[in-house]
Length: 94
Image 1 (cartoon, helix red, strand yellow):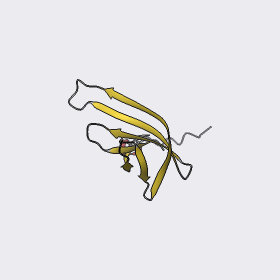
Image 2 (tube, helix red, strand yellow):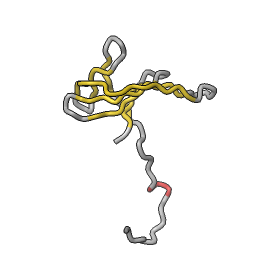
Image 3 (cartoon, helix red, strand yellow):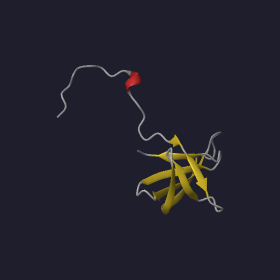
Image 4 (cartoon, rainbow, N blue to C red):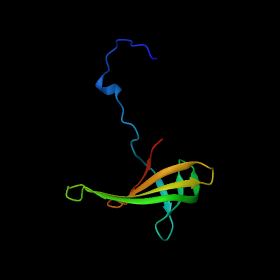
């Protein structure tokens, strides 16, 4: 159990969890990820899962993304998504 220090939380002490971060992705001819810069180039060895989300189409900023779970040549697993509206790529998760 963690001891209660009695110190109140400050608004700036709260940080979002699982915030996407922009990442550079090299795409193949079909638009699939071939490599990711983290900051060094890492080749994608396999795409383990892929799914698409289209949501909030009625808003001024709808969500349209395609997600990938990729296995890099180094053995690291990453969750990536491409924003299909802007074309930008993001890394999701820790």
